[in-house]
Length: 230
Image 1 (cartoon, helix red, strand yellow):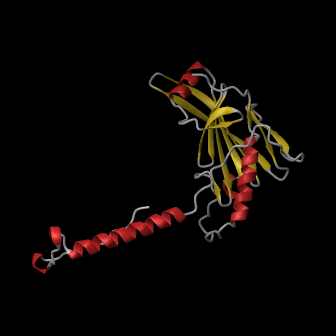
Image 2 (cartoon, one colour):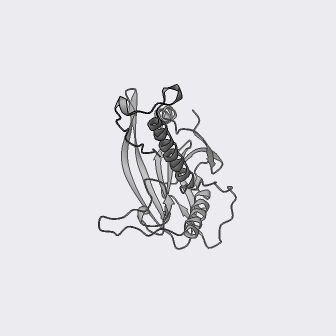
Image 3 (cartoon, helix red, strand yellow):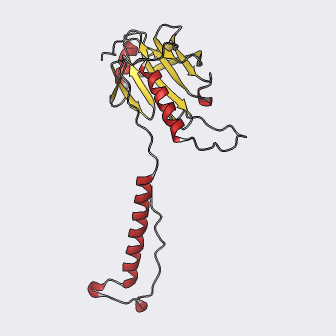
């Protein structure tokens, strides 16, 4: 957070009262004001609400017996979901590459949650980009995920802001989340054009949503569960 500094006061040379070392009392007052503003800004920054840092549960985490197993129609993954959640899937065509070559894929966009539109409820979105050939593997290796700072399904993965990235020998996965009070930055529930501003979500509700989403993500299993080897 940037502190707003006061506008410097213009003072004629003859009106300045000089102290030892040539510093003016006006300058000293200005420095005190700046320090007070900076201290206030620092206190506000430290008291601001911070986003939760989800910790992926162990791969053998126990989920309720009533949960269902969603099996990806294309065969790239499975994930466990609560009985009230619904699933939807769509596909798209994409061509990736550079001056050395290219490859085409049929990508999947799967949503599991309380609403089949991820932005309108609590849920998890899984984007799947297959790795169909050797050139695609080379391209994925050149375009790395970023820092591998966590694991998912026991495999090295990249995590940032409730979003996980994972490369396996078969596909690239992006797992996004959405829930009232949090989620991935690009999928957090938003207002429509005519909606009223949302009411603050109670912290107890946010915590319950976080735990539920973490548990669902922890049941994600890529097929096969083998990391991309570069």
